[in-house]
Image 1 (cartoon, rainbow, N blue to C red):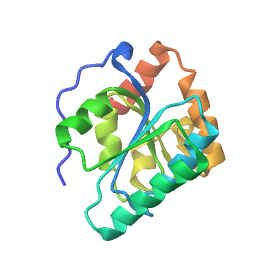
Image 2 (cartoon, one colour):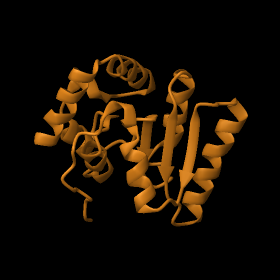
Image 3 (cartoon, rainbow, N blue to C red):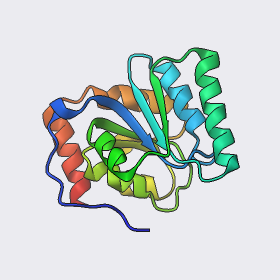
Length: 171
């Protein structure tokens, strides 16, 4: 599939209004329920989970995500489904970090697009996304590790954040 890569300029930190964004089909394999679990453990961080529901299975998984948020009264997560490509790019450009929880993602198009929109990715330590990121401080094996990595990476000053994202863009 094509990847939307335009010559991106560095997006200034003051344009970053969303803490963490996630992008992917709502599906058990993409593991958005784990993202909601991570969000529950980091209540001071705002999450935007974006995805699409191409079939009944995806729609049911989306409803499970909504139900978990409602049941546990998690207030720092917003779910968006079936948004336009232009809205998705706008949201990515407004986010500081990208969270990807799928194990063994074959490639990781969403990870590459997030990097091109100046989102620092934090990804599961497997598959294509981990190979794309290729930095130990940005990969995790479980929810607790993800929370630890997020808390560490969010503490970076703007210079170190810029160095991190530019290193990945150059790869």
